[in-house]
Image (cartoon, rainbow, N blue to C red; front, side, top):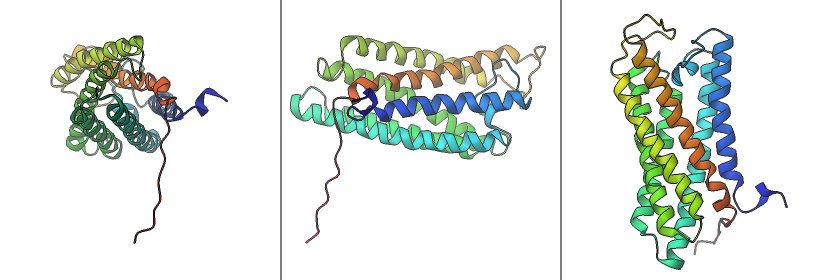
Length: 236
């Protein structure tokens, strides 16, 4: 049996590969078309103009759907662990589920409303995505330690804490520096007064985004341990 056929590990594997491809493909197309600067554009900048905006929107929507399925599967797995061991409080598990689902919905908002057309909605969606996403991986890191030694190894728990800490630390410069960026064009001039803030914000944004991806990468071993079944019953 191939590794991706064990349990449900294909879910986080697909999510990681697809999400990474979403960012990279839209970036490469935007660079090829000279729509953005080569060095440190915002992720949203790479999906602002067609045709990359169409590809970015479609692939991000698929990532959001895959994220919802993966997050729900993780929720059910932790729920089962909680029933069997009592080591994870159900309210903590439900809190993580809510944060995760909000983050996925926010992804759809970011993909649907481009920053060059509906800037306010796009920025609100991006902020909601990052806030709820960071909170999700923090809560999941707590759950991992609460459930140990069931589910994840101590090294996976430590990796999740490290990734969550990195994402949390990078989140603040992303938002704070963005407030000082006044230029709204996709091409930046190094001589602009707000250019250092743009670089700091953009770099941290990429760090947060790929921290999310790396966090889901740690789910693969956990998802080998279980499957989900849909039960159908006739209604009397």
